[in-house]
Length: 114
Image (cartoon, rainbow, N blue to C red):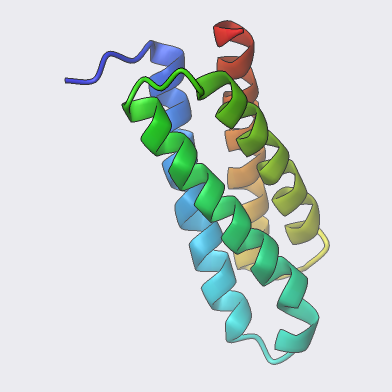
């Protein structure tokens, strides 16, 4: 059974939502007619998704690295949100919103754990 604080459980949920949004955005970007213009978005989406997944796994394990991975995840989410906000596609807007929410949750956990 997981032994997470309410704040950590919320962050875990936000990481999984962000992971999903980033993967969906990257996949949708590959189908855009201007896919060459979406290369950076796809790359950052994939990086962010991977870091969100790692953050979630370490949280579930109650790793001693939670503070550091949450800080890294917040940074990755900020970068991804900034990139996605440059595009008018709905999938990019949804991804940016999920990234902003995840970054906020990760920062709160990192500050609480520090």
